[in-house]
Length: 171
Image (cartoon, rainbow, N blue to C red; front, side, top):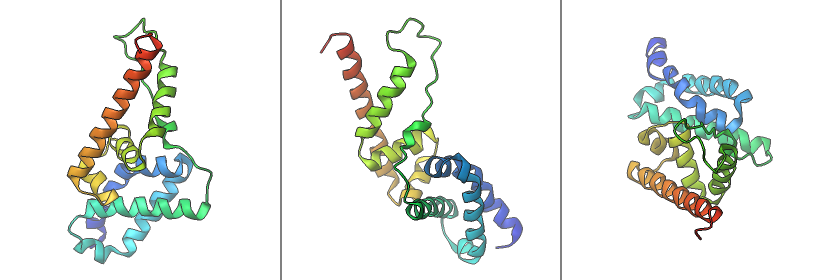
């Protein structure tokens, strides 16, 4: 793989892996991590060129690199849900539920999700990855990725409904 092919096929994906790397390592370390990831991929460019799914390989390499860094640092558990942002909807003006409270409730609900469902949900609905990218990064089937996202969304919806109805006195 020459320099131009590497730029086109591998380096161009650095913007796509940034949200995942930033969520896992923090925004301060993300740019350095991406640089290291690209360097590792450049060193293995002959194997990368022969790989049938270069995009998946890049995502998997980025995820594994982040996990290695986190293991070395032995950090305090950093919940990725702090990166959630809740946008205020202009159609709901007089809601009893304030957006800050909703954000807190969603973070609490995400903590209840199984690890894999939470990871897939965050990658899909917050980071905006495609199902194929998530499946490649987590080494699972695309259908399983869809199931995990669906279950996570259903669980979150059910929990929000319970909380919302409880506060209104319907439960």
